[in-house]
Image (cartoon, rainbow, N blue to C red):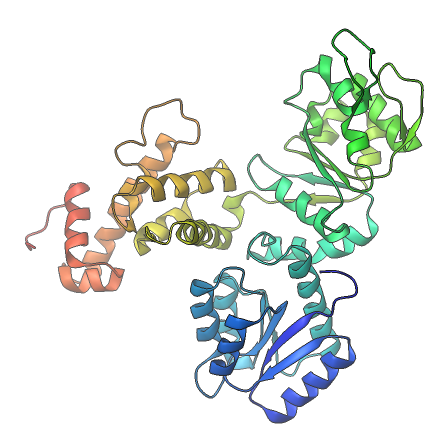
Length: 447
């Protein structure tokens, strides 16, 4: 969203006094606002116009704002963020909507300044990212706090250190930080320090002049130069050799580089984002990381929790990646079996989001039917191979044990009645019977 563009707000409020009051306030704050009294009117507008934020009451005369959000989230790609206004009695419903992907909510009576602040932040984030799911970090409280802090960090911080286990999405946070700090034309240069041999790292970072060494047939700009005016993302900074750490520190201090084999000093200006899964403080104590560089890059630290610490995000990401597959393959729509989704949401996911994404993609591709049950995540064709992107045996064992236990509890709850159990699980009686047969569960009832 360009600085001169007005954020376009879809306001859904049937209370005439509150609606007009919010319309005037948003207009005074520089927003372009469309006010709709019913969910039906808003639905028509959202399907035909581009908005940056939707501010909606939950209770509307024709159907609830919650129903409107759920329906549109399944139909529209790139749905703008929804912020709900709710009374005290609807807070539980608002929290459920956050878990389903809504951006935020405020309880009535609310602070108008806070509402404007939240809407402005959502509009900036959605507009700069071009819409869609790319900017969504998760729905858990910890990830929402990170998302809320990024616009402020992007405005003021010149260096950012992102820590967390492998696969938690450190580069995704770095890219969002970049998008909030710069326009789309600014460069984002990502460098995996662990993937470049030590002998080549200096020439890759600093570049080289023609004739600097054998094979240097032409001048090459390094990553420092390429990131000028944008963001340099150094992933796995803890793997950078000590000799190169000293040279990186000099660049950060002088904001200038000299290419390998060159004499000219070249000014560079970029925001630096570093990421690591290692404990840099501990590495400093063991002499494996320079203390002066540590304090130079440790201006602001953002820790991304592992997926096992944010269970709400697991269910959201499961649905997110299934929906992404469905949008790309409308003729092969998939859905996750409810009991399998519940089991997957309790799994520890040691590979974090990367493992979850690969698991869902493989299940969607290899599943013979539209229903993704536990078997789809470890069935025939998923075992063996080189293990790259495949599911670990621990996940397969976990799914089997949990699904069997889950079905047993459901059957006991309904006194062994197959039809009632299937209805409670949201699956057909035939599917339940096939699951039991596959899991070696016996029952007197027959299909």
